Image (cartoon, rainbow, N blue to C red; front, side):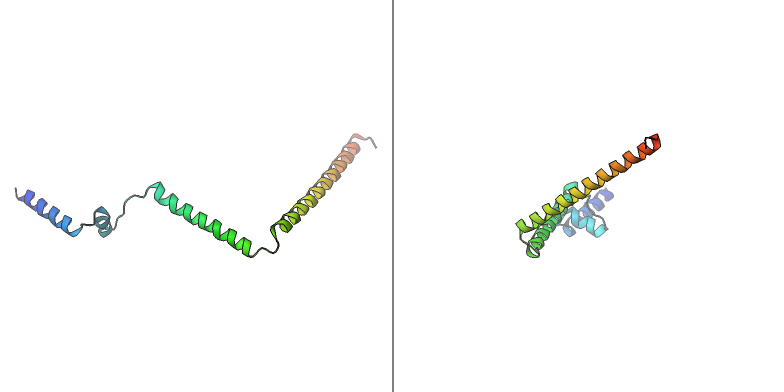
Length: 107
């Protein structure tokens, strides 16, 4: 019977000292509750969204040209790159054909 009284007194002392609940008790013991996936994902998505917003804002503020000018310039650069690639592919094809002809002895 004496143990029962000791446990009841201990329970009463613990409940009066740690009214804030399990988190406070675990904190005093140097422990913490297991975090769920949502506890990790939601803040990470918030930071990611804020980064996108800041990046877009800085991009608009410090853009060297207007959007339509910049898009035209990018389009021209892509066209030039496409032409260069096509020319290089044609030259490689001719070189390969010449090499094959030489190996066959068609010269």
